[in-house]
Image 1 (cartoon, rainbow, N blue to C red):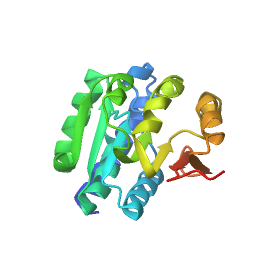
Image 2 (image 1 turned 90 degrees about the vertical axis):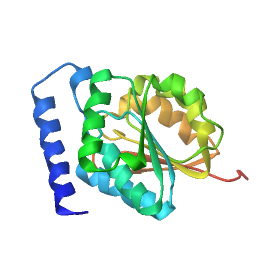
Image 3 (image 1 turned 135 degrees about the vertical axis):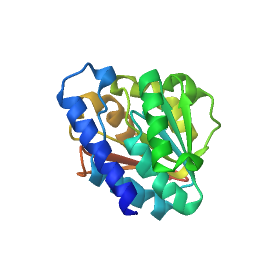
Image 4 (image 1 turned 120 degrees about the vertical axis):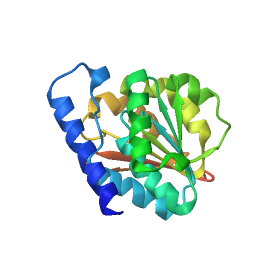
Length: 199
């Protein structure tokens, strides 16, 4: 990472913390991931050579930038979904400043509707950081669009365990997935889709 991009990420981190501390309603909070989570996601993408990446919940694009930095190194593409007009516009400006537009496709839509439109097994890597109350409703499509060997990463697994419990309970009982909770940032729950279940 060059110094200019590192300084921009620091600027976004400071903005997110200051903005959220001011106490606006949830729709105006950035709710960004932590820097160590960004580094962790980038390492996973590189290790997997995950070229087809989906992010559910763009916010101001801080997490997307981490995903796109990794994607740019391996010729990948990040598709990121956000419903908020304000956050879509903010993220677009941030992607331009970061110089990462070629590796990002913004989708301004309701996530539940957007997920229905992708093909089966389309994505290598899915990062879920959105409205936790909707996760179980989205689950059939999330499961469908991840390829065998692909990875689902769910943020806030330690910071908001009660809200994630309905989905994590489903995942823990699904033989199509191998799971692990990683204590990075706010807690990352990893679910890898196995190629074939024999159990």
